[in-house]
Amino acid sequence: MESLVLIVHVLLAAAIIALVLLQQGKGAEAGASFGGGASQTVFGSQGTSSFLGRVTAVLAAALFVTSFALAVFAKDKANSVNDAGIPSAEVIESAAETPSEPELPALGESSAPAESDVPTAGQQ
Image (cartoon, rainbow, N blue to C red):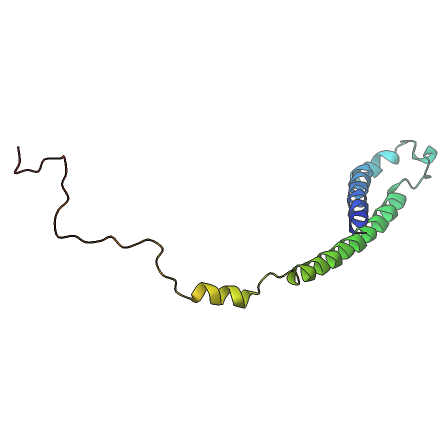
């Protein structure tokens, strides 16, 4: 069900983008008053502004509904993750506060220097 709502959501978003790009700007109406031939259009002499505006508003409302549905699905999924055995924040913080022993062994101190092939300043 979630994938179906997600597909519808993406299609609605693409449709809104297309409808916004199809709409004319406010400056385009001045050319129609000087014989632009707007009376012979499919949507009448008023133009497509009110039709495309209404369709855009309906698609925007549908996009809001699908966004809300996806948010509900995400909330349900987050609640089910908490039931999956993941420790809570308090458990993680208490484990981080306990001091642990150093993992590296301490170097043993010996009083006699180790023999080396490198000569010292006094030896030649």
